[in-house]
Amino acid sequence: MLSEPLAKTYPAIFKPEEDGGYFIEFPDIQGAYTGINENDISYGIAMAEEVLGMVLADYIEHGDSLPKPTPINQISIETDSFTTLIRVDVAKYLKDTESIKKTLTIPRWADTLGKRAGINFSVLLTESIANKADDILHPRKK
Image (cartoon, rainbow, N blue to C red; front, side):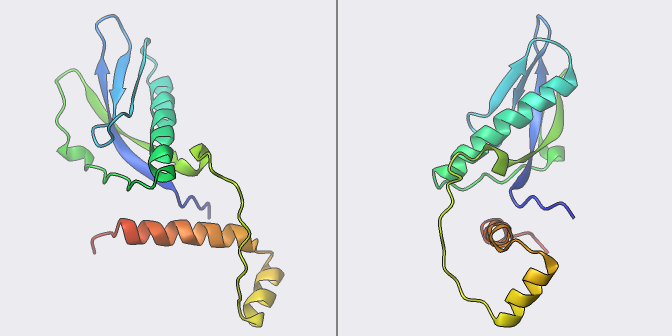
């Protein structure tokens, strides 16, 4: 299974421009907007993903909480605009990826089992921290 603990999805609004192309904005994220001057929606989605990743990474690196995404069916748009969901792995946009050495203790059986399974303990711990932090900071309704 592919694990992306920092994968986030937000709605984006595509507003057509008078001279072609689209203005693309994220209603939940201040400062997250981009645009394209052509009608290639795939390119617009790629541009939206990039700006979303950069802005969310900036939030994380400055210790700010990520905004809660508004459900797509609750977003009001103009008649000629449309809304779509944009998914991004924020980890790809983080600048502060310097590794920090941590010393920890685990039971011998866990070490043996992990080595036998070929588990990279650093990757596992990093993913686990991201998942646990996401659960704590953004609890899901049950």
